Image (cartoon, rainbow, N blue to C red):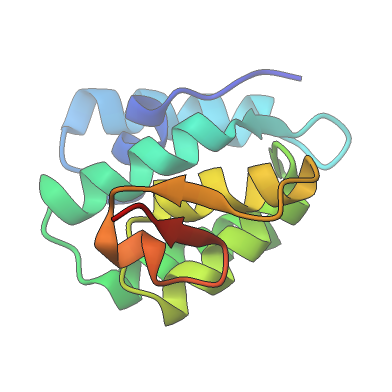
Length: 132
């Protein structure tokens, strides 16, 4: 099993740098198999969303579709997939950042009843409460 950094996934998905995109494709296609999937951490997912939205200006709907495809790819394994899927579902419906939902879902799984935040967008979700 190998771990994949955000920049490798970005190059593979966006194909914006001919040399690095080809290297990323070869790595993923040769090293990531059903028997030995490539590992994607929750941090990498959060960074991926941030980069696709910010640097590449992908619409939110496209970003959520990309994450859904990553979860469905048997040659890739997402760290704590239950939390990642719950976070994606909350992100699709909510107005906060994906990373906020990862924090909230991770805390809920750890037994927290709420995550307290100053972020008004996240604080309005079922996972968090704003501090006034």
